[in-house]
Image (cartoon, rainbow, N blue to C red):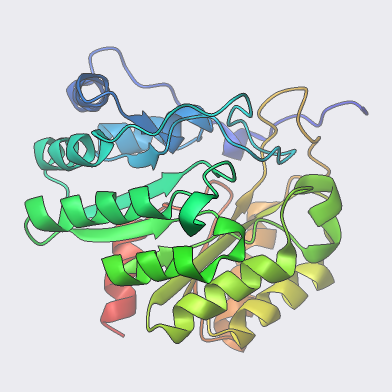
Length: 292
């Protein structure tokens, strides 16, 4: 691998103070309920800010993934058994945190292929538990592709989350490098299917893996064609030396130019910033969409 690019100052984030009560409260609630967060497992740069704001993105179905995306810090070891108590624990944690907007994501579980499942049954149970036990809570799910299985997707439809999110992650040309076990067109089909079922649909992708500006605009146009409602665009940051190198760090001005392109040429609501991630400003964005 070539030499790693130096992280720009505008991408550096602070570590939570040891006496930050909110941060410690979130950590303790997660520990008490034996819950995982993508904030922690994926080394999200916004973890300290979110925990300090008494929020987190819950990661269900364990913390090991059956895929091996070259940009992701999630473990790809042998998956664990699904915890049937996890839906109740998530509802409990959401209540303790006083959440009015709850984001649920997961690892990919291709091993759970029996009965057209792929983890969709567990998603259904989590959403149902939240809706049944947390008054007025809004639920956003960020799901894997479920191998494109419409029976699995129909379980999500039946559970009625308020927002359906599935990340496209990068341009089609880079899938063989960054997402060897995923399929660009299949991910688009998943988003289209959920849009056809009446959901607010959301997706996100990273910059810095080797795409050029025309390819970025082309991807945005493709997402607009399927009537995407929300897109998150952020800078890829290499989690460790074993992951894909960063080819380019985009400047803050370049991010603004991409945001302007989306605003001028599409009907998509953009969440575009160097540190933007899938659940970045999720509740704020949801409110703007429903109040359009």
